[in-house]
Image (cartoon, rainbow, N blue to C red; front, side):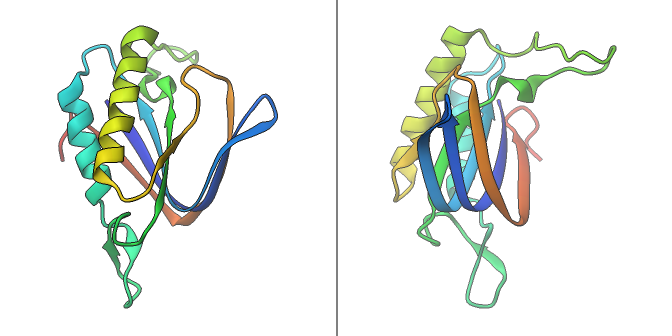
Length: 150
């Protein structure tokens, strides 16, 4: 399971040109689920995201978690995080989980995040064509892979 975490001042998800979800001052989490992933991967990443200290403290040092900063969360499914580009120019998505499995783990990740953070976790719609608009604050962008625990 891979995630891209971006610290934002605001973010909005549109579906069919209609606003669907919006947050201010928080984290946008793009999540890609691989066919070998399970709930342990989701648990690991949810724990990491909820405790990640990427918000500034009173000394302008990144030292606060999303809970410490009273931040919001927006979780978006994104199977393209498992794109393989080694051969040719057209990405392959063979490693991405099938929709049934991916959706179940996506929903599990959201429930897990809701249990770990102080604010309601906003989401997009799994499998939908979404337009995500965000203002990356910093910019702060962090990649985390549950199979590569660095």
